[in-house]
Image (tube, rainbow, N blue to C red):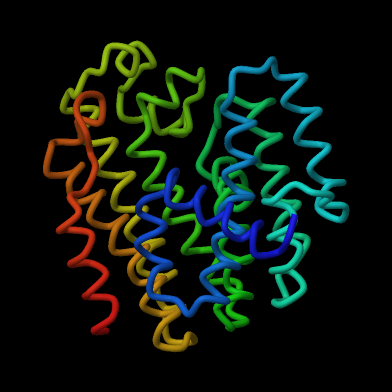
Length: 272
């Protein structure tokens, strides 16, 4: 397995599995683009195991093995590409291990009592990705990189309520569900009641606040890296805007952005 073959595989994974992500990294120079694709493909590997159909004990075993595989990539193209990216850029091992720990948490915890508890999970599964990527972009502002990662995860949680429910998970904090009078029966039935809309408006406001704070990261980046990160943020913001415009009905119909909308967001990032 050559390095170029490994990078070709993570590029295929990125284009196949994460069209929004692929739109963001297209503005980067090739070395950075390949490194970010390697990080994404590794994160995708963690997600695929955690969200897959295996019993939780087998998921746990495979995720624990990934901890060891980070230092012994063998011939696995994702791990080979990631090892080369780590050689070229100061991607912290702690961030990659935290990402795996987030996947492990998904095999053990299906509900979150408070936002503080949820925030700890988001830091692992998304904040850690931000910290890993910032090393490639060339900034040391890990705090805002983590905040931005958390913001994107909060938008994912709003978007994926139905999908997460079908996996047996509820990421909306239990105390906030109770405070707004929303039950898990409402989630199961896909009821977009006024109580639901109020709860989700609260979630959206918080996500936008994290997004605003995280985007201060752009000031520490070169123009092409800033365009990449700005594109990610713009795509997620547009998705949240679309959800809000639909009255927070995330239970039915596609929420995908059109190709034209995505290209407009890329262009806005480049013109920043």
